[in-house]
Length: 498
Ligand code: NAD
Image (cartoon, rainbow, N blue to C red; front, side, top):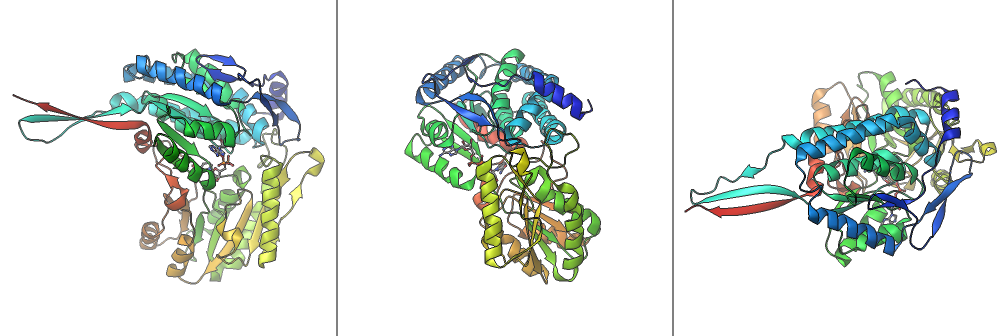
């Protein structure tokens, strides 16, 4: 389907905005009847009231998740049957693709072209990929002595809480729930308070696909209440979290304060993108470098937010990036031709603005942008912004801004480039541009990050390749076979042969 502005506007008029909790196969209000305002950053208007899950709702969802897990309706279902249900789920997402895309666009202000052409297809691919591999995995037999047979099998962990952020609402949720469900777990999804609607909607699609009641619940609410209570719950076996490092550290503490539940963390980044003077194509590198920070309004965990350029090409290269950024201005997120949309809310907009002011006070120069824009819409928009003369010790080079703000630094030689790249508490991603294969491989080995892009930046997002962080960017991986480990535990069975 090709999107037109007209089609998107017509669909929006007919849209129903989901608002309730989903527990044990049905939508319901929270027991306390509490709710919170759901505001769109496109125009600052309230969309609807979302039911707010508190402790008693969590207890109810956990009890039904545990009961169905123990009864084995899903956990003991043959993998080939689980596969069929998830493949059906993927088909239903495809059927409702425009509706789900719109729910995310309206909730967080990202463009309809991003949600419809990127987030939705990649979510569908992710579900299909996990569905397709589950009946092709085998367990192991140990090479023990003849008197014994050692079986090494994998079992679902039990009840998993998935706590996810707002920047790719559906996509980040699917990265958790597809591998968690396919391995036989019960899953409780807590969407970010800024983006609850697509999460609530997919609960009905999972039921329609044939998922037994109780296996999947959705509990909207804020972090300090719903998120914290989930993490402290003694009958939840695992928390799969994507969000900031600050909250990731709290999640680890909550595990220690409760039942030592297994924790997987996908956290933030301040990723370096190194452009060597022997880069094979400076135009392609400039295009990718601009996209790496201005795509999705810069609200990307692995954004290439620190551009590290070899001194002799600095001016030419920054001119190219600056020119490209002129075509990456925010515009109406509902227009399929818009490159960028709104920032998620006023708090995030203020945070970006604050960092731009800090950068100026620290002595860096704003080369491009630097301002809040489109105020007449009532929404939250920020210009693509480029800082020059940045030192890596500055706050704007060390802290995750999570907006369209590029900090640029320079280096003289390979060692200096790697040293700047690694001088950060994060280690999520990095880019390296050079035509020297030895230099590229050496850089990839020396950079302490979970993903290194050589002569591209985030071009291919792919369910087969694990994504996750070194250092304070996280623990564990999403995607690939590796993500299954988050949701499985290992059982060793010793059989004596007489
Ligand atoms: P956040 O940490 O504020 O919130 C993430 C989730 O945690 C939300 O659902 C929130 O309600 C919940 N939460 C907040 N406080 C909590 C608490 N005390 N206990 C339990 N849960 C709590 O992050 P955000 O602002 O929603 O998202 C942006 C962050 O996510 C950025 O740091 C970004 O880099 C990171 N992120 C990482 C990846 C990755 O794959 N590594 C992907 C996307 C986003």
